[in-house]
Amino acid sequence: MFKVIINVDPKKSILDPQGKTVLRALNNLGFSSAEEVRIGKHIVVMLDVESENQAIESARSMCTALLFNPLTEEFTIDVEPC
Image 1 (cartoon, rainbow, N blue to C red):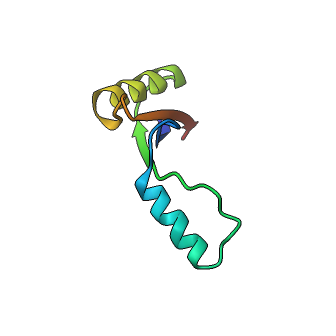
Image 2: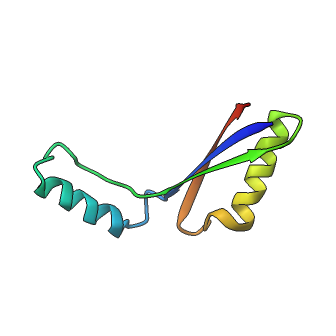
């Protein structure tokens, strides 16, 4: 069993209006050191597979099939044994 952590973030070249809104709010609340905010998705999937490579491949397939938009987003995959 493996715990797969998938982080989906907007590509650097894509505007992130949600991140801009949060940045403005943080600055208005006095957090002036905040210079950039990007809002993404954090997805955790428990997989019953035999190897880390199988977990990575399965997570990659999930991302391409459903979890991210290749035109506007990018993703990273981390795997932890359980």
